[in-house]
Length: 204
Picture 1 (spheres, rainbow, N blue to C red):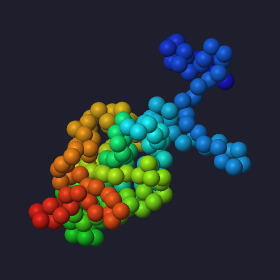
Picture 2: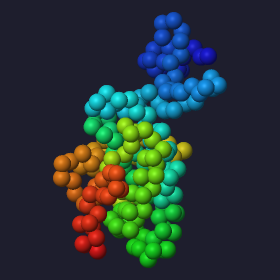
Picture 3: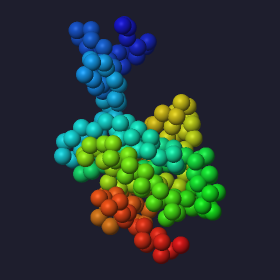
Picture 4: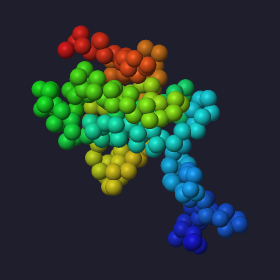
């Protein structure tokens, strides 16, 4: 398939083993007809505290498909007891939602809008229903920013720079697992109630 990476023996060694097999680093599934489907990248695999292997792209795709308001979702949970998510709003959909409901359209305000948080939580619950129990997101937070192509978070083709995101937002991620998180952290459970939502209502 290839001899190796040009002028990069380290990458060649990692990709091609001593018997000549090319290791692509992809995680695939095989359906009943024997067709292969690429699920995720091995390097992105989440291994939870309990040792469960989860492909974050599958989780993120299910949630994004359930919500027109979400531009990007980042599933988090490596060496953690459960999955959580960082949510970035879709700029166009968020602006339309704000206009429809008379909300302040700036992302900082929308990220703390109880009405929008309820909409996101409902969409997350729908996305969770498409996933196995261990894949379901338990807590989330909406980041008060929009992400752009060719940025710290996204490539020029809008692919997620996962490592950059987990490093840049390490504090926000840690709070998703705090025993007493702040009002920007919201929790999903069987009744779809969110931590912090009642406190937000009292402040609006």
